[in-house]
Image (cartoon, helix red, strand yellow):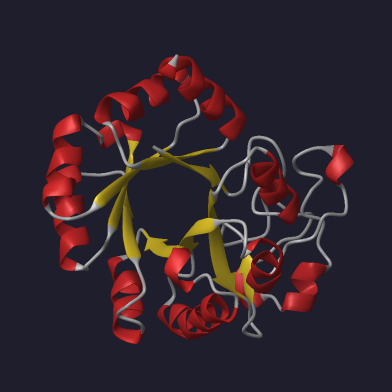
Length: 242
């Protein structure tokens, strides 16, 4: 099973920061999951929430803020005092440092149509510029976002994320031409994984943060999974394989 560091390694460092991705790299991970959104002045930043409130000392919607405004925010103190002063990275900064290190699952978090239609071409250009195009699966909970990706860039790998109705999720993913369906552990089963495989798709599970979740992922034999605490997941897999 392929292990993806979720938002880098969000249980070990401030999520979606370069520090978190370095943690994943130092643990030997070859794959990470991250989220991107677009600023008001059309820059891509690595951030999960639609607002900056939870993970920075600022407030406001990402799409309403400029890159300069976001770059002045503290993106580390929410996690621990020793990370004070860490900044929100741009997607370009992530690519600059890690394009030769990771394959990625790249979740588009901008659901507003004008925003994601502006985001997608910029994202594609960066993936091509840094040689990440072939090692990226673009993911979303939104079928509209994934359809837009397919329309603009049919050759780019796509993955549909869901935590509801696994049969319907597989059907939606297949109709979207996805290579991967990303399913929460609450809806995973060996039969669902077999069904996805029969439809030509891999299955990525989320999350592998506890013994119970890891047991589900292992029993279902998913192709990969993400974890907030990849050090725990690595140790769990090692112990199971002994």
